[in-house]
Length: 573
Image (tube, rainbow, N blue to C red; front, side):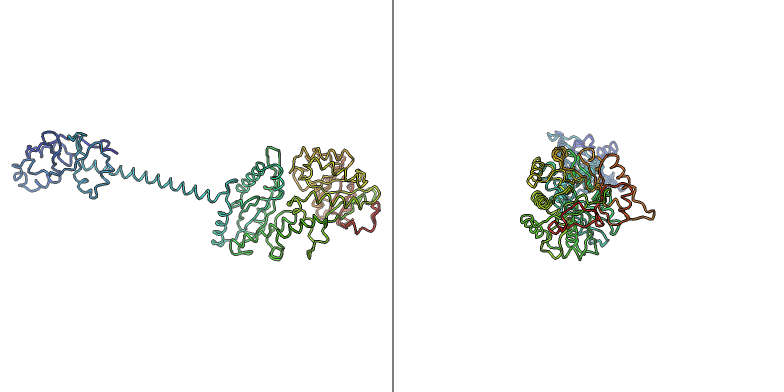
């Protein structure tokens, strides 16, 4: 702020030759003046008489009389504070350490040529200082805010995953540590996506990144999920407040959100999600141990086919390492140590064994407890070994299949249906073994939507056209089964065992199951109920015209090499 911008005023100056009476007349004529400027004959300031000094001179009864004979030269201060109108007031005031005279008397202002221009009285100085201080405070506040914004941005960049814009591992660990220090119960959840790697490899990083961004957004927006974080790759984490059933319910909602299909430029795609939970302080007392416990639970449930698992010290701390397990899987596929087993399927219309479903077993795994398909199949898929695994199972089972009319049913991975070569390789395998296509059935789940539906339709259409039957497996467990029945050439629906429920007081099957059976009849689809374990279930299904059933009641899966009765066309006892 320049002095010309202050509230300065022009007071007519006095000359050195003027009398004492002239000074008195000046202050009477200019009551707002706090000093009387004195100039020489050229108009340049040479001194001043302050109002305070003048009042002291006339403060006693004889003051006026004693000083009346004195001229201006005898009472003036010859060291005036003189500033040019063009000077910066903030710089000038800042250079004056003691501002008491300024705030008492004010100062004299001059033009660029040094000629008197006016005065800035004491009140004007005060207002100028106030304005300068306010401006300085505003600038300082703006600078502080800018620095804070910059610091926040730096912290955000340091704490944020660059792809998904949610917290990164560093920030998540800090938040979990803070919660541990507070001491209130909570649960730590670690998420590993299922089937993400093949999606990323097949369709490219653009689709993979799109999936990661959408899933991150869903987690961050979900009520109850705190501190949503991307740990790295296809791994996420979040915190659930409290513990027990409520936390498990929130975890189930989170998993459901992750499983929902995602719109991409290639159409709808979906992935699975394995979630491991660990509770503070029951499972661990610090953030490192807590995340480790959640990770162990996640690895366990992922090996079992996916889902949600809470940390169990007895199970999770005794499992072998995931890396060692993967190495063992690779060797087992290479050496054809996985073997086919067959489970009978009963025709309720003829009470004959109509066929068998081929299931994979690992009888010589070398472990004290043989891994189940829910444990080893996800690893086979994740490691990209599903093709070698499938053709080994197919060839072993086809070599075993005896003469007759009963069928064999094989489960097919959705990833295989994205290859146009699959149909030719499959049909060539049937020809090599001399097996009519009519004796073979392929089962697929609605996860086929995870891949390109158009390619899947072409591949399956060629196989079905050769005479192979197509069954929709696990009907009733997903969200798009009905639309799939319209999209693909199915002739059979396998009703998931979850639809059977338990025997109720009313002694009837669940309405969803009876409705599904009715739908199959109306759509001319063969119905097959899985998981039948009681005679009551068998009777109820027979009454409602279910076509086929399988489950422990009919028979457990037996290794093909251990089958003693090769004839499949036998009547069920």
